[in-house]
Amino acid sequence: MIFVFTGLPGSGKDSCLEYLRTKYNAAVFSFTTMLKDILERLYLEFNRDNLIKLSETIRQTFGEDTLAKAMALNVAKAPTDLIAIGNARRLADIKYLSDIPGFVLIEVAADIKLRYERIKQRHEKENDATQTFEQFVADHERSTELSILELIKQTNEKIDNNGNLQSMHKQLDALVNKYAT
Image (cartoon, rainbow, N blue to C red; front, side, top):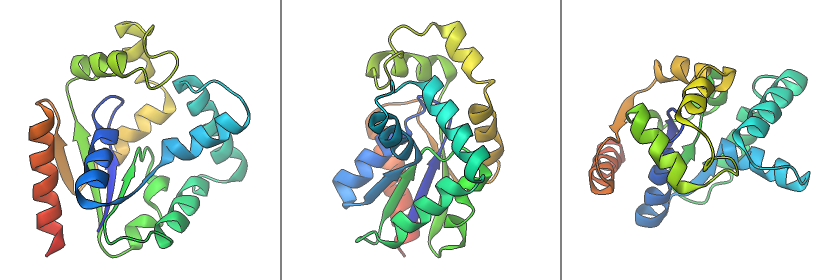
């Protein structure tokens, strides 16, 4: 099984990955992690703006499917039967993955105000704590966020993450059971 998660910022994609890693020993990969690794190597701040700039630069310079090729190679080397991939943002991100048997594209969805509160609390990126709700909403107009909406139209499954963690876990368990047979 290859579960690929997409969704708007703060929807809970990384929480899905962590649960699958912990409960099912899933091999976990993320498009954001690839970009973060590059930012760290260059000693650049890990924030949404730099992630977007780097992603756009890589795609414009080396091709829209560059990150997708790297992800497909990661998947080919994965040592487990369950692979969870987070933060797919563009149709190009699934170009190679969607051809692999067991591919499932999953939307993780949550209300915008709840997503904003989650981002403020998690402090994952350096500017999360200081971002206003208005800035958060404005970020949804950036190219990487608009492309998520196109990718969501292609999803096979949906996780409603407006509830608590137990609700999300129950939905993930149901997906594992559905696709394991």
